[in-house]
Length: 489
Ligand code: ZN
Ligand code: MN
Image (cartoon, rainbow, N blue to C red):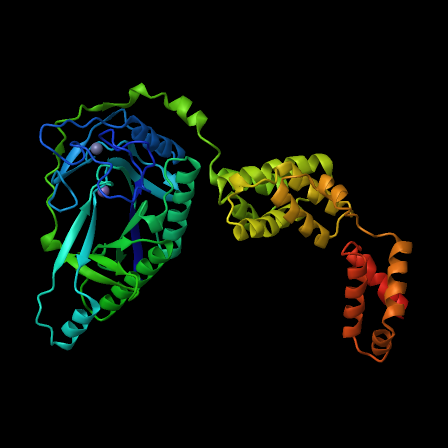
């Protein structure tokens, strides 16, 4: 039996106002290259870095949220390596004294969380046009290919947090669940958007299979840029290693990259060419004394975290964990729902919140997606949504009228009561009114009535639709159907 051992290293860009060691803007949306740069983040000689307190505070908050131990003493180290996206030829990072040690998330132990700076971005240009590419492929090309690389240093020096887990993860599913929950916590703490597609959260996985011979050989997989890739890379690598070992082969300690298109990991470099980073304490920055932060106070100020919120929603609203999970996926949406629920309890005390849940997660979300509007920007207040649901629960609005009314609420921001009054919306549910409607329709559609009596079931739906239309969509659909079937017997 071989046991998978997986640890993750996750880099996260923090959304501070300014960069890690200078006053340049930290703006991920800046599309003009080399705008947010200065002598410090470009690594000019003679400049001095100053550590960004907002970034340090962000990591402390995450450390507290995960139950880690915030260091009293910490310092930055130089990590030396050469690469064109790194202007100083070293990265200021943390080696011996990370900001946070320990902690736990989803039963996975956290080893450490430290702070460092991001690199610039390289843009590889290839000025061959497609014709030349074809020539090259056919072996007829004579022109040398003209390749060049552009460097954008807007990202150089952006605060980058690195979180390392203990190798407690057993499979791809656990790794994805861990990464997703971390992303959600980062968003709840408002310290990063942690969008993987935009490189704001980058995952690396250390994967090995231990067996009879003890610990297995560790393979590091990089270039994992989506949750789908986290899953694919780990699953592939576990299968690859198992296969190699089964054939009697040896796993080489190496770095591999995930190829999204080929759906496999490919070898990038072996252990022999591994870097020696020559870490040493950064001489240009004073050591950090974290005793200045009131950790007790910071801990009390943390928002309710997703896991706690899920369990509270299960308790308070009687939802299953999956329903609660859906609401908690977005903090603003969870707050909105909670406000609507508390108003609903006032106006419809017997509610079980299911109708509210359905209208919120399906109808309202549907309109929001159609109109590309965020929950924080919609005109419908949580109170008005609660009133709409209470009208449905009291039987004063059919689902069809509710949907129309919600659409108008979305456009105008008016309450459902105001809109119903202004538009003459009132559900027709009285027996006399409904029977009058039915008599009218039956008299007008003798053929359909005859068809139905001959056994043509579809005629019933036609008559129902006609009656509904005559009521301008305001008939109580359930009662209308019952009375109609009764009449046709
Ligand atoms: Zn700068
Ligand atoms: Mn790092």
